[in-house]
Image 1 (cartoon, helix red, strand yellow):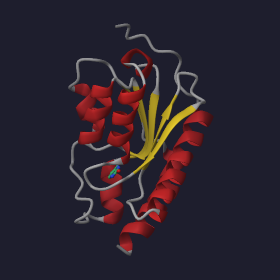
Image 2 (image 1 turned 45 degrees about the vertical axis):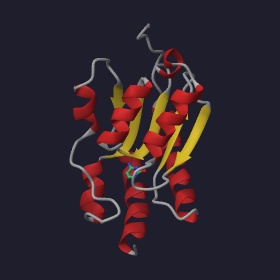
Image 3 (image 1 turned 60 degrees about the vertical axis):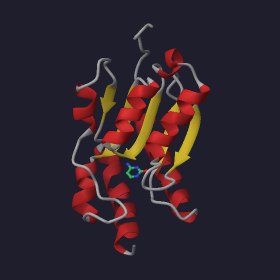
Image 4 (image 1 turned 90 degrees about the horizontal axis):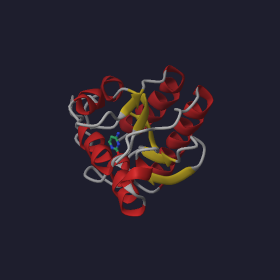
Length: 166
Ligand SMILES: Nc1ccnc(=O)[nH]1
């Protein structure tokens, strides 16, 4: 299988997709879930193929998206696609994205920044394993982009508002 990838997203595309990931996270709150959302974007860095909100502590937005992606698209195609999430994927989700063969992951703020901002919560007891660490231990070069400073404040604000009243 070819591990060639097209050009990556520009800054405007990165911010637009991360903001949309936060909009999906807002929808998750309305549905009674945790404030996390993920997108799968096509190789053109424009077309949003899938949106997924958090379901529960086992079915995170990112890993659920990766499983749906692997069910609906070929591995060759997914290597050209990008997963976007405003909060860094946990090690479970980074691992699932890897096994789904998604070639690029873009995140807004570090999971450790989320933990700093909200403290550990029994419904979200963050694991301190970075997605960088996970991808460094893989056999294929998944491209990781993040953190993205411009998205951090709005992401932190939404997370703090949610977890402080939980
Ligand atoms: N990054 C995430 C943390 C917790 N739950 C999610 O769905 N996503």
